[in-house]
Image 1 (tube, rainbow, N blue to C red):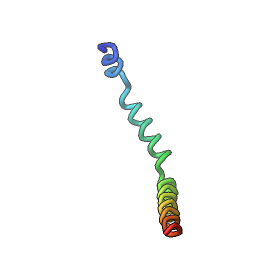
Image 2 (image 1 turned 45 degrees about the horizontal axis):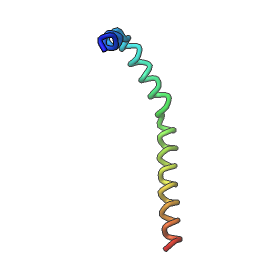
Image 3 (image 1 turned 90 degrees about the vertical axis):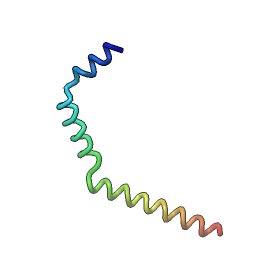
Image 4 (image 1 turned 60 degrees about the vertical axis):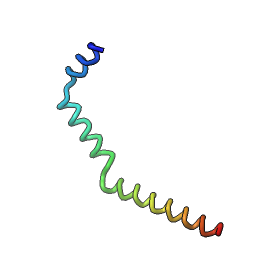
Length: 55
């Protein structure tokens, strides 16, 4: 466990932070969020329509 703590302390947190931010910026753009939100709305609408058809 002590070795794991030493490895943790030795990490280059600045580089990891920049890499994490770059990954976030690449994966969660406004366009991608809009696409995901539209998919959610379409799925909710389809579910509502399926329930209405079975009523």
